[in-house]
Amino acid sequence: MMRRKNQIAAILCALALAFLPTGCRPDLNIPDVDPVPVTPVDPVDPVDPTPTTRPTEPAACTNKVVAHRGGSAECGVPDNSRASLKYAMGLKCYAMECDIYWTKDNDVVIAHASNTYYINGLKPWENTLEQLRRAGRLKNGEELPSLSDFLDIVQVEGNCTKLCLDIKNLDGNLTEYPSKAVIRACEIIAERKAEKFCEFICTGNSTVASGVSGLQGQYGIPIGWMANSAPSVHISRGFSWANLSTVYMKPYGSEAARTVDEFLKAKMEISIFNVDQKSGDGNAAYKDEEVNYYISQYDKLRFLCTNYPKWLLSKLN
Image (cartoon, rainbow, N blue to C red; front, side, top):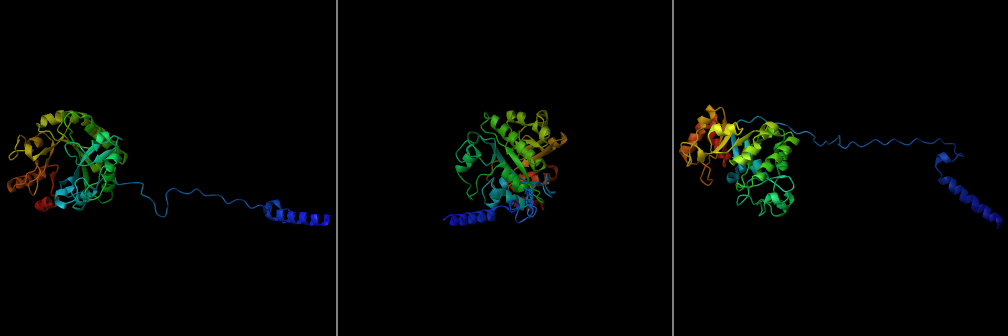
């Protein structure tokens, strides 16, 4: 019996030795192997790197046509949509005009509001971007775009189309929120070094205008004021560019008071909206005589805005 116990002990001992690390087994006399060092993994895959830089200025543009709401009236996609932006880019327009609003979570949504300021039935400054998106999609199935979404699209090599960001008036009293929209937009643009991809056009509301004009110098992004005022008033508010409706312009506008030449004599730039193929926009000139007049003024203008960019480009060519 004792002999059997000794045999079992010998077997267990042998098994224990077999499972010991080689460095712990003097009978094998094998030196320890140094551990293989672990090389830290580079967060950027060198085989398929993720771009970390974007172009900081657009490609050269050969025209001064701005697609109002992306030319949605012409191409049939929803206005202020990614599809409308891509349409304007496909035409190589100077810019796409789009409307911006500040959201409760300090973001900037791009949309054309209904009834002055409702987006999907909600007030943007009382709701987050995600809440606005959950309330409804665009007719083509897209979710509401943010300013960052639009910058992702335009801020690519070879693109010449800028964003012309419209600072919308609300009801004349809610001036805090348009100001917040442009301030936050400037911050987002600056973070991406996209200043040369963007311009602003500002509601004619004088309170909003006074609050945002100083941002031109701070961020280096031009702002055109839309007030039907003399050049001296624009200059006194800190603006060197006027963006005016055809309604305000002589000789055809229903509230005609201004001329292109008076702004040029004051050493200001001027742009005009909208010159269209057909009626439908209350700010548009569309009769042949009016269209031909603005085409004759084209070289003097910073840009000419239209709901029908393909049509206007063909007229200019």
